[in-house]
Image 1: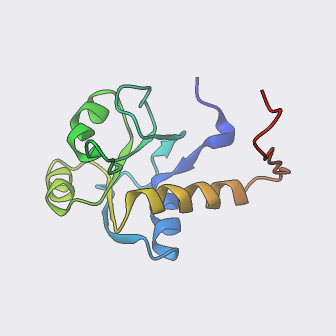
Image 2: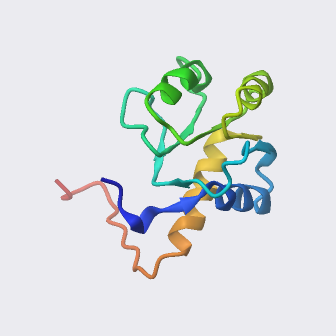
Image 3: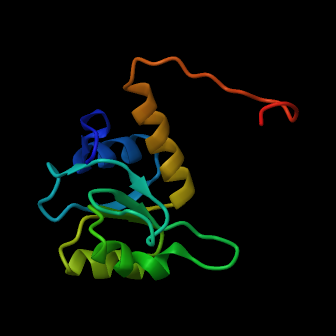
Length: 130
């Protein structure tokens, strides 16, 4: 079960990405008020009610796995590929076309963390953490 702590709407995603100049285009297909409960970068993992980020990797591109993420229940897709974004828009599936998917994930994470009243702690160094 998803935590209500993480709940945000797809319109919130659009607002954040647009304010950080990451967003090129978005099509929420009437789903702007739809909630999502996290992010996913691996279509083989849990995708239900999560925003799938199609990241480019050294060996493959996340755009190849958009349909798998959709089949596993993702709420929306953040991607760079114009043709894939157009196909999702035609299918009336919420999507956000961005300049760089990794940057969009980082900005969205930063914005979400900023909404929480929490202390952030980092454990650094190369000795003794395990």
